[in-house]
View 1 (cartoon, rainbow, N blue to C red):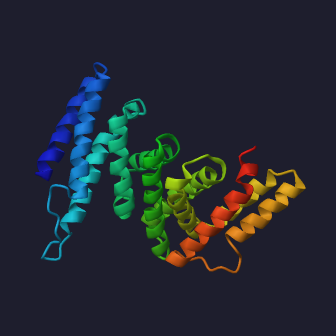
View 2 (view 1 turned 135 degrees about the horizontal axis):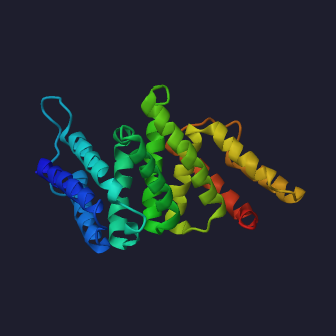
View 3 (view 1 turned 90 degrees about the vertical axis):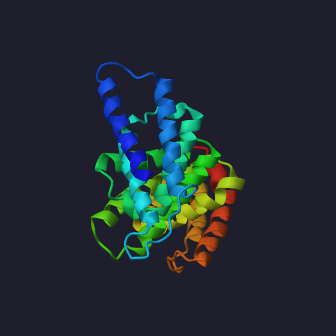
Length: 271
């Protein structure tokens, strides 16, 4: 069944690219086609229909095989997914539901995607955080947390995959940092996932986080405001606290971040 689905996508891609060379596909028709394929891939990945028990012979689990199939399908479909098409709410929601699930649960697999598609995927996460509403922002933050968690656990494994992921998450650290510090967001739904994502990204990129803080402080010309920010950031990540991704560390960071935002976010948002 999965092979049939992928074959359909391959045929669609070949047929559609050929048509694109001669004329512009009707936007609504393309939207409906892509929506159907996205729903198929999501169904495969989330096990809503297929049974993905582990292989008894010790080979790749069916779940991992399914993830590979979904990523292959994404590779086929991503060139067709434009910013204009993502303005269709239903496609936008389905697309982000799929890519955030893939990023969170199958980090190693996405790191093996072709360069341009991997870059598109990371750019989509940034778009999902900043432009697509609370639900998608929450999923995006959870996906980033999953990716950062995997990177932190495997930092001793210096290879092309971890280096690629590290570079991508380094750029997303700045995005999440700015989102938390400067943007107005739904605190009830997003504070905990935002705090957790920021903490895990900090754990992976401590020096870059320090640079972000120093850059922020350098913009403050008011001595009183500058000192308040220094004190708040010192409390957020105390020098004597060991960097760790355990539950206690995350809860401590949430508490400290809540205090920081209550104390100085009003100052930060007036720039």
